[in-house]
Length: 208
Image 1 (cartoon, rainbow, N blue to C red):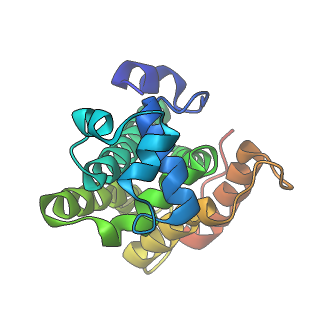
Image 2 (cartoon, rainbow, N blue to C red):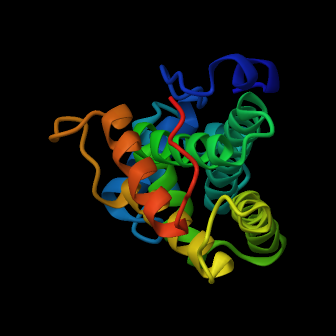
């Protein structure tokens, strides 16, 4: 998703936007895990020769890096767009950021799951880059809650811990959510918004 698209449709999910090779690699990683997937398996499923796949991605690690980078970039663009929509209202900023996180981890479940679970498989600079992107994403929630506490809108005595707990709760959606389950992503987001308000001790009235 481009920055412009995110700014107008951060709640909208259709096709993943991944190139076909990465779609195939993602499916293989979900089925067999990163270490259980061979480059030959990905090439065969993508209807390419191994040299043909290497023309696009130099290694299996490069496939994983591309998937993780896409996930983190997409989430960041959607998150910043949600906060821009919320404006300066602290309660609304919390609500929309939580909504964004839940929608992403429900709609992009496989991609988010691999980005989370296969951090252990990233090496060198790729791992460092991923951790920096993850920390940058976390700081969005940190600032929202810290601002709310400073303004008296939230009364939690533990803003940093509350922030981590909320993000962990939202990102955990990718580990269990099923499209044919009891709640739609939007319904789930509404429930998480309510739970989040209780977590931070929100004093402001909920905003639609």
